[in-house]
Length: 393
Ligand code: 3PG
Ligand code: MG
Image (tube, rainbow, N blue to C red):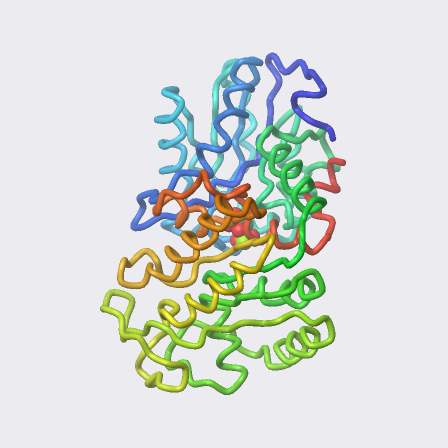
């Protein structure tokens, strides 16, 4: 690996473009969970020690190439500054002709953060000119964003074609841990998949079936499965137009002898702020939405985990931000961590929302490994080459 440490790079006075994943949970402009920020502090500290000029590139949300209010990285730059007890300059403007002169003015060991890279049209389409433009801002590029490395975006993949590129400390730690775990993995293997970001993940399930004995589907993904297999889900969050995909998932699960498990009961409410009511699937009214899994489902998940030797988990079981809908997620954490401690099974959890939930319920230490990555973690499990990793390897 082309790693920041292995190479013993001299970076004094060099402009280092550092791509990190600061896509942290926010509520009305306030950061609600800081794990992803804390994870990249060692890389920043090392670059300060090496007296580099540090230029941080990152994103938050999916602004689709446009400036979106509420998706600025400014609050995050302030948080980094607080953690480091050091000034972090922030450039509010889109990348333009003036960006380079601002960067040229910063002193060795200083930090400047650029605005949300996804505000630029060229980022997500991996535009060649945009990749060149961002590469021209620095002397060296470092990818320390494992959780974004499944995206062939300009600041992850395209840029590496135009500048010397290396891996940071965090990405190295995550890939090493996941490589070790996936090579030592023991059957029966269970995957729990949930969360609210359904659109990209549902396709991944199809490719993961052959690797698992059980797949437990919860959260928004479960609503989609339930709806497309004929159950009424009221006004629950779900993905449209995926009948064929779900048909394929079910056929493939039979062919590979992988059991797909969907909720048998759920907690519903008329809105996100309400209180919950336990209902069986089939009893849900049109004006209700599913916001958590129910006790019968939790019991069935416990049975599956009790007979697993490996458990991988991405995505909460419900809207855990409201304590009325947090029980499913809390219980999943409890069941996995107790099993890990008791029987020394492998348990890996990953993803922004998942890490936030684990942190909230304070069970970080009991998993074998907790990854910052969700989508990237799942694609890594698929055995796919991640564009951000291949580009530097
Ligand atoms: C994530 O949280 O999954 C990463 O920050 C990547 O974001 P994306 O899923 O919007 O590409
Ligand atoms: Mg993602």
